[in-house]
Length: 72
Image (cartoon, rainbow, N blue to C red):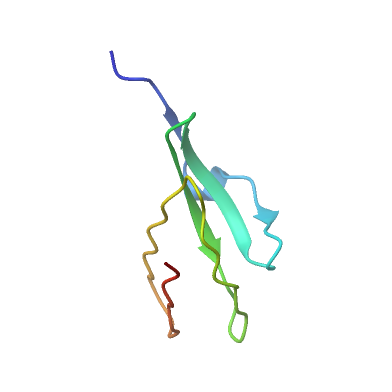
C-alpha cells in the first residue's frame, strides 16, 4: 500500500530561512522518500551549489532571471 502524505497550501506553510538566506516554505513530505518546498531568493541573492549523497533536487523557476549550475 502506498505511504500516505499530507500537503499544505502555500499561504498556510510555515516560513523558515535556509543557511544561504533563502526563504523556505515546506509544502509536502513523504518521510524517507521525498519532500517538496518553495524556495525564494530575492534579487541579487545567490545560493551555493552543493552535491547531496542521497538526495536529488528539481528546480522549477517561476519568475525572475538567473543562472543554474549543475554539480556532478
